[in-house]
Length: 327
Image (cartoon, rainbow, N blue to C red; front, top):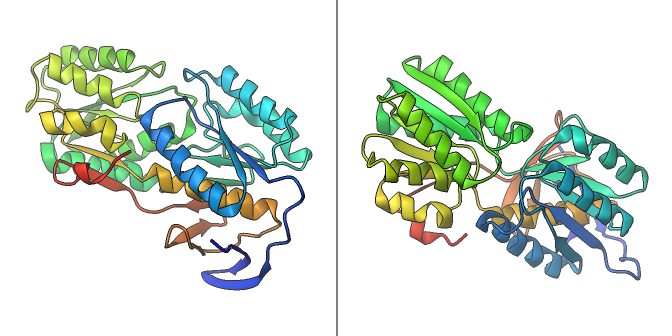
């Protein structure tokens, strides 16, 4: 794919000049997910590797084996010490990373957040899967369409230090207050990044609230746990689960009826866009408005007031379409 250095003015795309030739050493781009090995981040890796191949860059992805902020910081520092040109990260804890991000930028490294943000840090751009408000609104709107406008909902999330998930929770709460006053959010619990802990929180929520209508999972790691809890309780049809998880993770639960739908986006496209943006910036490209990415065949939205680059709108996966996707 031929990528050109683009100067973007408002929504108009103006092609200025070809990128300067790469230095003798191949551009190196790293991404640090919140946890290693889950299907969501495997799909991000596949999209990122495709972009790196097309752009002639080297891509490395490494994350912690559990959602541990200290381990994530050690991986970040390792990539800095190795002299990577671009480091993207899905932050577990903004405060832990702030000084490290500043040091990396001072050394001339392009630092992006992707998948989750650290807006109070010096990161240059956040490559976002979708707007936080749209994600939260979509999750609650789809839930209400199935349980009705009066009911009780429990929320199970990952670590409270993950800002994106906190934003999604806030969007769900705001939507309930302003649009669905008959919806009561009875609890918000935070796990240690394991399905087992999510299972326990979901079970506890059903025990405390015999009339509970739904349990919402804010992370791919929580979706299996909450759905398994409903299945184990024999509560399919009485308590609905839903959340932000990949089609492959949600498929069995969608088909069992425990989780009628999942909200997400295509993580392979997010990985592709993250590498494209990092490569563009490392080659002195600029972003100041909406722009086209040829490999994704779409217009990418840019929000200058927050320096956020948005992949697109959320997707809803149901029994009707879940088998059309493989990630």
